[in-house]
Length: 88
View (cartoon, rainbow, N blue to C red):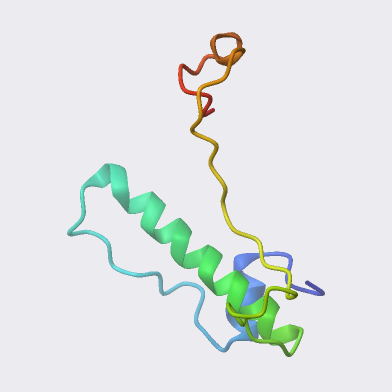
């Protein structure tokens, strides 16, 4: 991501006003920050793909994609990291 060092620069690259965030006031307070953060990450992702002049092709297994991966399997050492199911 050249020159996209922040949400503001990514939003400007897409011609989006970075000060106009989604209105999440109707959501519970503990969820508001997560929704706005997801919005920001989505804008950064769109800008980086656009800058590379590529689109995400979910059917192309040769195209690198990054997504969260959670290992919820029990682990022998789970107690040592403070998680009972291996998720931390």
